[in-house]
Image (cartoon, rainbow, N blue to C red; front, top):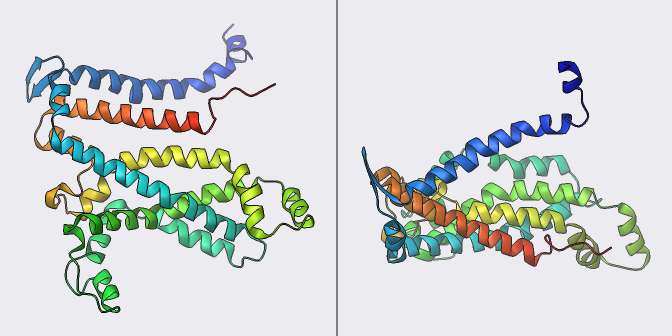
Length: 297
């Protein structure tokens, strides 16, 4: 009886998805429900008090939270602008028949992703240091410019964060696009070449449309990664508050409230708002890109 149950074709599919379901419940659904309950409470050490919507009312009037949302959304948009087209173009170059040393370039671009973000953040903090001997100040000095306090000004700090993001994730996204390009039938490019299409026309008319599923995937994970960014900002400012909170993100604000100030109820409310923002943006972009549209028969 037991053997018949184990080898049943009807039961087998459910057995294979059990690990995913358990993982989803334990590490996703249960924490969300728990956070939802905590967001309606004031939690101070061992004292727990039910306060209803007070945490959410406080969020609406919290200027620091609004700044954190602005910084995270701006960072997300910046990464989308840079980390989708640039890796796609690099992938096209590497996928080209005339490209030499493909494996070398793939390795070089991917190595930053293997580097600890803590180490990367520390290195970039030194690169964008305010002293004249820092790498970036030496670079701009070549053009006769004065040293800049990169991490103390809004837009220069934003530039430093985007540079770190590009250095770290360009190779990963490039491999996603490269995988998508290699799944495109070569006959399409050969037919286009026979018709007289140049490289740019092949890219626009064939590569980009055929890469739509990959683009949607990279767009989805990039939205989440952009809005949940924390460690990069934390390391650039050595775990301290950035000047005028120019590096404050939603997760950074959650960390400050939950860990530093031990206000777990309020931090839970911040976390749920972040989840809602991510879900709304991703559902909107998936709808716009046509993922939820029914296929015409």
